[in-house]
Image (cartoon, rainbow, N blue to C red; front, top):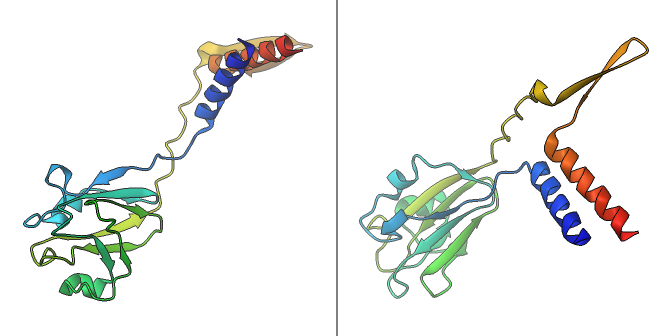
Length: 173
């Protein structure tokens, strides 16, 4: 029981300390997936792609693919000399957006790029986390000692977590 309490307390503290935005997996084209005759520029225009997000491509594996090219080859739909071939053969491919830069992705098979299967995204750093809400005075207690007022603000969750961890340590001894 004591170990469970320690694990729960540690999990609570880790949750409170977490400040990073979680990565997102984007299904390219949403429910239309990676297919011709879809405007992927419009699909991407209202989205923000952040560092460590993923692009998930779903397509007919025998007809199309996902390759990364430079901007010039993106514009001209030229699949020669790709930067990377993200196709793994199953028609279910992930592109990890692990660098802040432009990514230019096309389908180099079956004329897919000429049919609109091209996607350009700019990967940005995630925004800073929102500022913490101010602590309410309802958890404030004032103590007077020798004419000085000391205020201690102890959030209930932190107090409970510390108490639980201390109890667990004492039980282990």
